[in-house]
Length: 132
Image (cartoon, rainbow, N blue to C red; front, side, top):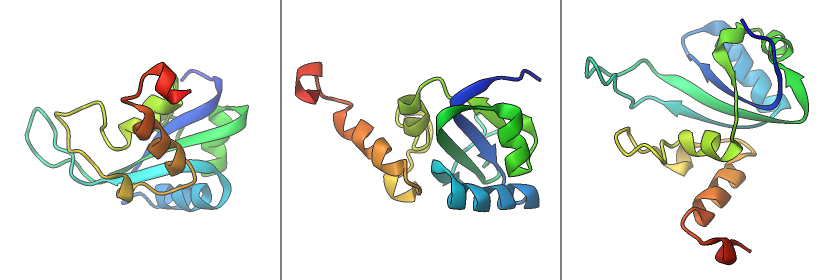
């Protein structure tokens, strides 16, 4: 397990896991986040519906250790990964760049970072001059 510091994380959490339910409650009360329940994803190899899971993107003002965040949330560190791009992380919540996967609606996303997701979507097809 690699220890690292970053300002943004992606998490995957399962509703059936009590520690994950508690982590979601903590996230909703304490963090800058966007999350969505993925309950319409299929396993590409078997064609079976995957078990429902939450994708969560977290953003911090200052870099945070992955191990400290896992400890704060009471979950194993392997449910966290560094977000290298806030834009890509947020757009992944709805599978924006992956037409082969179920396309979730922004209506299904909750949290303060949802505004940032919508901003990215609104600017995605604009040129640099239009964005300015």
